[in-house]
Length: 200
Image 1 (tube, rainbow, N blue to C red):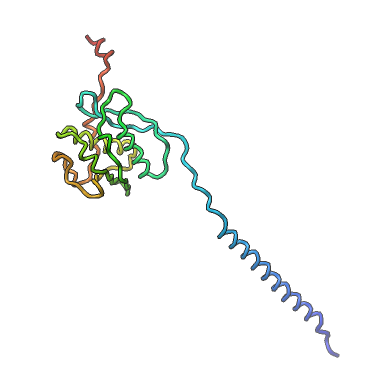
Image 2 (cartoon, rainbow, N blue to C red; image 1 turned 90 degrees about the vertical axis):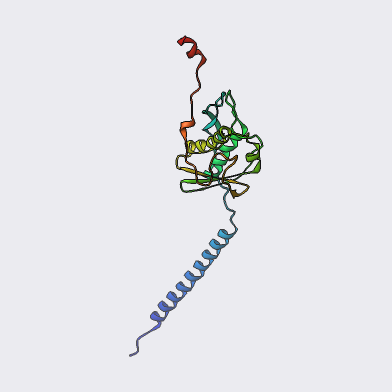
């Protein structure tokens, strides 16, 4: 007596049909996913909102050192762009009674930050606009270095370039061949006239 193999064949056909159906559905889903992935626009990068309080170093009115001034600056993203924004404010000059340290025609050509070092590329106007003398040179350079160090504590040294090239010095007084660390010994406090009057 022969066994009836029809149920087995039906089961096999159903399994094959199910596998083919699942493969087709899977292929359609993958195709749809790939299409949406390729055609969907890249979401815009979120902008940094608000402001932050930066500390800028300007010259004291008597030219005897550097004095801090607070300044509200638009918030920024990556460090190099923030460093450039802060130096831009130095170029803009002080808001109060302090004296500017950088020539007003100074242009920042670029800023690079790698680890604890920053490279600041300035245009020729910075070098040519500085008054003669060691005091003006020291004040200008360290107003930048100290400002960067205070606002970005991870940066320990600053290298200067002029028009993209290394320089030995600006006016023949300060050696710029090596990266400069901040020097807060140049900082001085402003005397309060009211306090001085009370002492006499």
